[in-house]
Image (cartoon, rainbow, N blue to C red; front, side):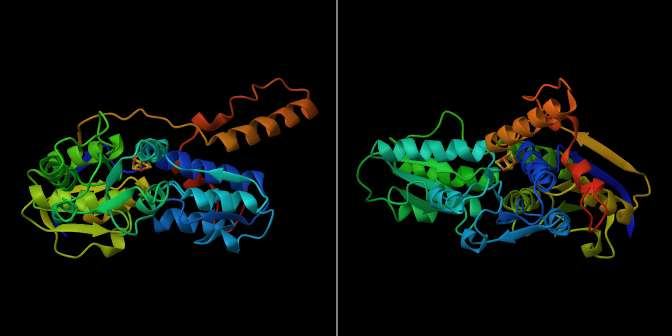
Length: 347
Ligand code: SF4
C-alpha cells in the first residue's frame, strides 16, 4: 500500500436500528438457554451473524424449522405479517427486532391499501425489507425498481401512492420518484420520504469524504442494501476505484493517494479499525463529520416486558429496589456486545 491519507466519513457504521437489533438478540441469549432462534440474519453482516452463532443462535429462513416453544427473534428488516403469526403459533417467546422506521412504512402501506390506493413501492426485489413490507398488502402493492418499471404501469386506474425501501441510494430513489410524478401527477407520498436518517446521513457524509479521494472503500456485506447504496453514491463522486469489502482481508494491494472510507449501517467499527490498519496512511486519518446522530431506539416491547418481569423477580428475591421499567439497555452499545463474549462461551 502507498496510501497518503484516509478521509473517514462520519457518521458511518451501526445505526440506531441495528444497535437495537443486536442488543435485543444479545438480551435474548442472556435470558434464554441456547439455542435462541432468529428468523433471517439479524442484520446483514457476517461478523455479527458469526458472533451470535458462537453464542448459540440458530438462524433460520423458515419459522417452521423452530422447535415448538423455543424463543424466536425476528430480524431488523421486518417480517411479513404471516411469518409473525406463524412464529407466535410456535408457542415460544417471539421478539420482533424490526426497525421502527420499517414499521412506519408497513403502517403507511396498510393505511393506503385500506383506502383503495395502488401503492408503488420502490425497492429491491427479493430484499428482506421489501419482501416483508410488500406482504403487508400484497394485493395493493407494485414493486418498482427503476423508471422504466413506472412507465409499464401507466395504465393503472384509481389513486396511486408512492412508498419506498428505507435504504436506497438517494439518486436511485429520486430518479424513480420524478418519473412517478410525471406519470401519476396526483400521486400520494408521505410528507417526508421513507429513506431513513441513517441512510441519508451516511450517503451525505460519504459524498463529502469521497469528493477529493483517489479511491473509496465501503465496508459491508453484498446483501446489505444500504452498503450497496453507499457504493453507488461513491461511484458518482469519485472517478477512482470504489471497493466494497467485507473486511481488510479483501482490500487489494496497490491502493494509493487519498482513500475515503465508510461503513454500512450493519458493519461493526472493528472492521473499520482493521481496514485503517491495513491501509496504514502515511499522513494519518482525517475524520470528516457532517452530522452527529443521537437517535436511540429502545428494545422491542416484548423484550421490555420480559426484562421488566425478570428484574421484578430478581428485586423481589434480593430485596432490591431497582426500577424494573428501565433495564440498562442505554448503558451499553452493540460494539460492546460484539466485543464482550469470548468465542464459544455464554456469559
Ligand atoms: S438503516 Fe435505517 S431503516 Fe435500516 S435499521 Fe438502520 S435506521 Fe432502521
